[in-house]
Structures are given as C-alpha cells and as structure tokens.
Image (cartoon, rainbow, N blue to C red; front, side, top):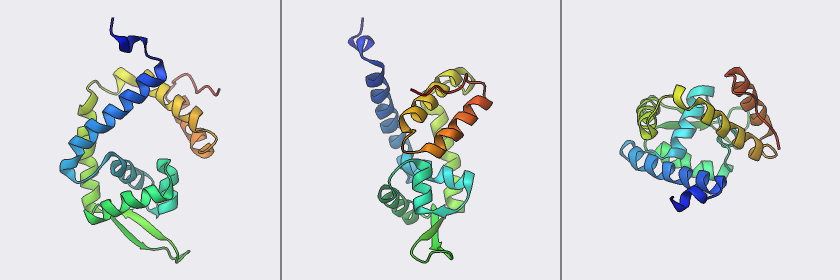
Length: 162
C-alpha cells in the first residue's frame, strides 16, 4: 500500500491542487498566461468589465496580487484598463479580443489536463465547491451564497457548513 493512501484528506487535496496548478501553468505558458490570469480572464468574460478590486474579490485574492496578474495580462494584450469614470483613482479592467481567444484555448488545455468529462466528476466538483465555500465563508460571504445556489441548482445535495 502506498504511504499516500494513509495521508489525511487535506494533505491529498493540497498536494493534488499544487500539482494540477504546476501542470496547468506549464501548458498555459505557451499562451503567455498563468492559471491566475485565466481565472481573471474567465471572470471578465463571464461578468464583464470591473475594477481591479472587484476582480480580486471575484477571484478571491488580494487586490495587490491581482495587480501583478493584470500587469502580465496587459503586457500580453489580454486585457485593457481605462480610467474609472465614477472614481478617477481606479481603473476599469476589460477583456480584449486577444484575451477572449486565449481564454478559449486555455479552456481546451484545462479540459484535457485531468481527463474525464464534466459528468464523470460532478460529485467531486460539488465537494470541492463545498470545501471552498465552507473554508472561505468568513472572507467571501457573498460568493459562498452564490456557490450554494449554483450547487443546489445542479442537485449536488446542497452545501454543508461546518
């Protein structure tokens, strides 16, 4: 029996997440983007233009961390930034047509990374959403409610809070 079979679940999850992130970043390097960049592009594609602070909250990172990601995305032409008309101290971030193309190619990379289809791992995905929601609840309260609603809509059995 492998010694990993005796690891606690949280260590397995952490190790798997780190390995997936490394493998994904290796594949994404050819597109000039990282996994963090793909997450930002995906939010901008799905929810539209927003400020750096709003985008950071959606991706669940600090605004300073998002700033570094946006700098790389802007350097590659994946996003554009414009002065915020409501608050001149901030910028509104938008995905560019180049960014849309990168996001589409990144989705193909992501789908091929772990194999299997969405149907084959729906229960696992719902459990991951549950973990993210329960552990991120205090910090990201609004997103937790959205996660619960989305999971309920997919009949994942609902999310449990701890």
